[in-house]
Length: 247
Image (cartoon, rainbow, N blue to C red):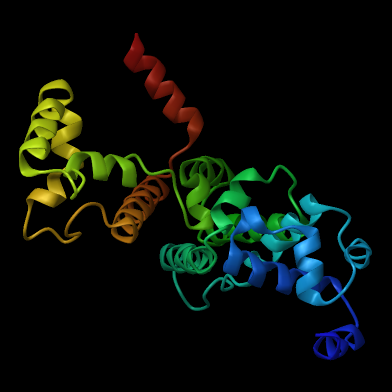
């Protein structure tokens, strides 16, 4: 064992090396099992050696997010703003899906590192370069929310789909009774949550296809942004129109 660890000890430890190892370890064992001690063992160093490069676990997680951001493709060249944004978002989603821990860590971050701020700045820049006003871009970013990182909070998550479709282990009579109870108590939720499971020709097949639903909502938003941009939309006029409608 000591002979196997010698090459790792001779390789200089750096922040990048620590972060690469942390990402790989989290991919393998999950973010809950990632610790400074376990990471040190993976690198063949004592835990104190890590603190020269990351001050604590929180800084390690911030660095892992930075590593994730570096995996996202830069804005596409020679493309209109709509395709540029779409490709960037889907690249972020691919990076996110490569690392099962990423969404949980992103949602937990309160610190905006330079890499994160640079990504956000670049993302805003795609709309401004497309001729969007600062006003519209502000509201666009609110509407996109976490979609800029490649994920969104799903209304019909896996547990809802499982409840609607029924556990396979239940006998047919029990499943029928559960369906009947749901249909009676929550008829509208039941209809929407089970629509794809009841349609043999559905694009998404059995249950919700997360990728399809994500792209559907993304395209819907981009189409809406395009319409507002073409109309020279401003929040001032929109608020005035809403105020007149309320009188």
